Image (cartoon, rainbow, N blue to C red; front, side, top):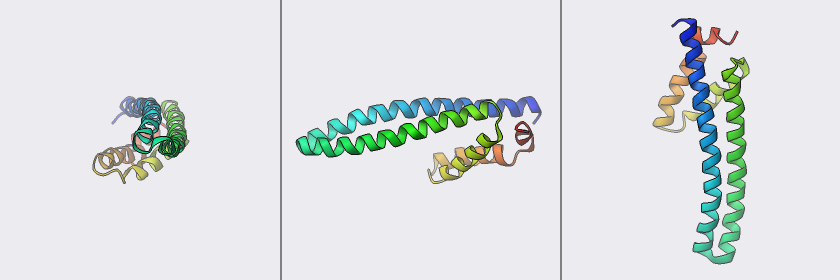
Length: 123
């Protein structure tokens, strides 16, 4: 793989990260609305309150992960080595998402962690 191809691979991973971050924000918003409504249907006012609190906690955690993912993707876009390392760590964690997450994580770990041409773009 030449340098231009390696740079393109990193840019594609960054764009996928941007898309994932935006989708994560949208899904957390829809999840917040849905879980509160579900709690009201199932358990009345008390159920809505409990599910609402859980929904808010899940929303905050999801937003944090989405924002972190956005900034890591921005770091990849700018070929920052810290973003490469964080992406590898997240991909190792992604190995738990069997089977789809495993396939993607293995490819990302190989590209960012072992492919010499890709690694060279971060130096």
